[in-house]
Structure formats: C-alpha cells, structure tokens
Image (cartoon, rainbow, N blue to C red; front, side, top):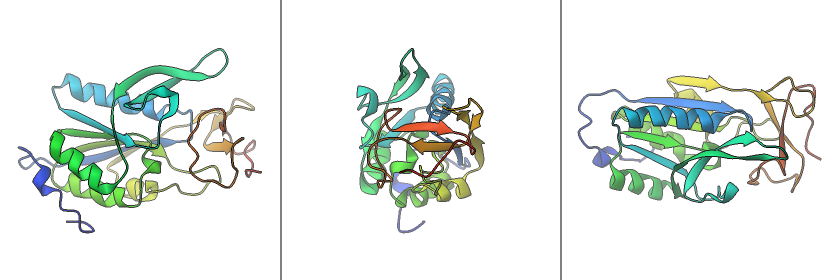
Length: 207
C-alpha cells in the first residue's frame, strides 16, 4: 500500500498479472490526447473494459463528459474525436470510481490538473495488475514541472514524449507559451485563446 491508499478492494480477477503505467506527455497541441485515445481504443478492441477519467475542471470544447482530440481548423483548434470519460475532483472520488466500475484498463487525460495524490494512487493500482495510460503536460507555461507529472514520469514503465509545431516559426516545440488570461495563474483551463506551442527560441516568460 502506498501513502495510505488501499486499492486492493477494487480488484476483480486480476490474478498475478503485472500492471504498467504508460505516460504520453509534451506541450499543448502535441497530440497527447489523440495518442491516449488510440491506445485505449486498441484495448477496447481487445475486449478490455476501459475506464477513462479526467479532472472535473476540464470543461473545454463543451464536452464535460468526454476527452477530446483536437485538430487545426481554418481559424482555430476544434474537436475532431472524443471518447466518454468520467470527471472526478478528488482522490476519494477517483478510488470510488474505479471500485464501482471495475475496469481492466484505466485511462487518464489532463493528468497535470490532478493533485499530488495521483502518483501514489496509480503506483498502487499498477502493483495489483492494472494497465494505466496517462496523458498530461510535463511543464507549465513557466517551464516548471506541472502538478503530479514528475511522480508519474518517475513511476512510468513507458514514456512517449511528443512535440508540437511552434506557432511562431513552425519548428519542433517542446514548450507551452501563455499568451492570454491571467499570467500569474498556473492552472487556467483553455486552448489557443490562452496558449500556444513554442520552440525554445520563440518561448518567453509570461508577461
């Protein structure tokens, strides 16, 4: 048991299977959610029961009950695909959701918005056999480690690190630039109205 989280009561027929944690990370607009969805769809085709969880505060694109992959439209990014997801706002809700749904596979989108408890919960689920797939920003707009992502990257069995295209010069972009909203808030949910992907040369500290 890790950090007081006893998740063993949520198991159903896990047997001796070894679990795993796979993390998809990188800046905004790099295709993390799309990669997550593709992997989860593969698990569904293999007749695995998949539970997808997202933070309750992520209500972008008018899809409160799903995760969204985006594409660049003529004027802005817009949804191109979605999958049903359950919103949770605390570790208690998270554990109860898994206990109730009894999945084989857990998918998590926008992991950076969860609290520091997420790493402890997921490493416990991994230890009892769950396959876990996570998408989240590794760095915030100040290029600082974001939320629970350092723990998740440390615990991960596999990491896929993505880049986007710099909104300024088109080169590979590893960072997220904050261009609008409140420059002092680390967590400000939004898309291209507040953020751009930038390469190292084009990135700058938020004003």
